[in-house]
Length: 315
Image 1 (spheres, rainbow, N blue to C red):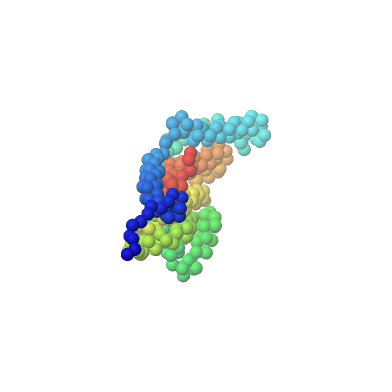
Image 2: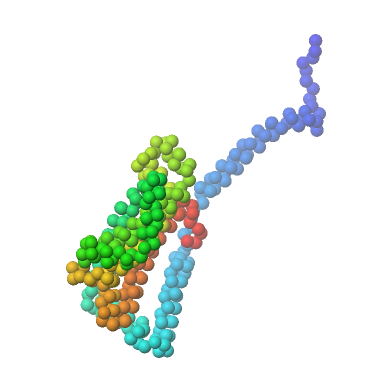
């Protein structure tokens, strides 16, 4: 009868290597898994350190302040050198005096608020109208083929071109103002959403359908969140178009029922050949537009980018 006893394999032989390899794998595998888990825990433990207030002021506040001071210095230098007549280019002090006049008259905030309220109201209406249009155009091919080029053409059309038509259609009233805002902002918002949807990975949509998110539910829970960065860019541009459209309408359309906004104040200053008032109107329009962008859209953009891990360090 053949013997069933086995003899130990000599060290260095193939049999010894084969016998010890599984043991070595099982011995190192727990250590490897522990290392991976430790690495994932370390990633989860990383927290974004907010910069100190002094560093934040130096990085975010000081550069624009220096830029404004530089512009004012160059402006004052050109005025002092008498490069152009004073009635064409008043000094910064003259513009400041015009601002003080509005303050003492009690009309400064009324003028600003009239335009800001119209701009915000028109922009909200443009978002309500432009968002479903963007969804339909992005997801329905026949509608995209028919309406897509029209939206692109409307976006490139200067807003001021709509003012005469809106006045004839609706009269010189608030409805004409809002019509110009909508015609200027809706195409931009819709195109921004279309661009954002086009950049959504198809696997997101397939996963949503697998989980039962179809139709309006899929658009709300999958499509819009995934397209949010592009949609937000469209909203930001839509506000810029809303503000520009409103200023164009206020410059051209004049009626006591409309009140005095920034655009109408600018045109009134031009009629009076008040160059200080003209420059003040331009500055106020610029300040309001920049303030809305910095206070509303920049924080939203940072929050969306941070939630997706796309925010660069130092922003």
